[in-house]
Image (cartoon, rainbow, N blue to C red; front, side):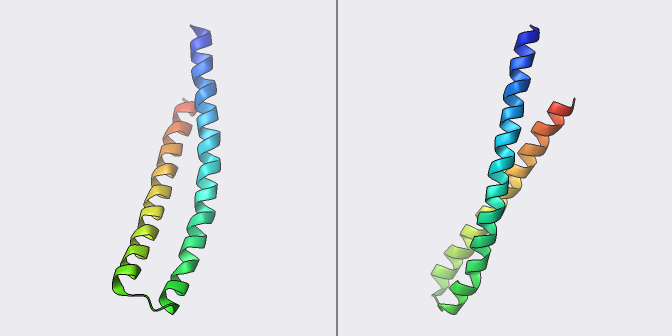
Length: 80
């Protein structure tokens, strides 16, 4: 049984490490996306296009937040 727990813990550590990497990448992508906002405004796109872009940015922020929450949960489980 000890091996099962050990293998589980190893998988959880791998999960935490990969989530951490993905979250860091999401931060960079989100910053790039948010920097496009001024380009979208400058391009004077229509309301529909601007609305769609804002929706994408909102969804990206929400996804990043949920990944961070998931990472916190996994890390707290590892600390137990």
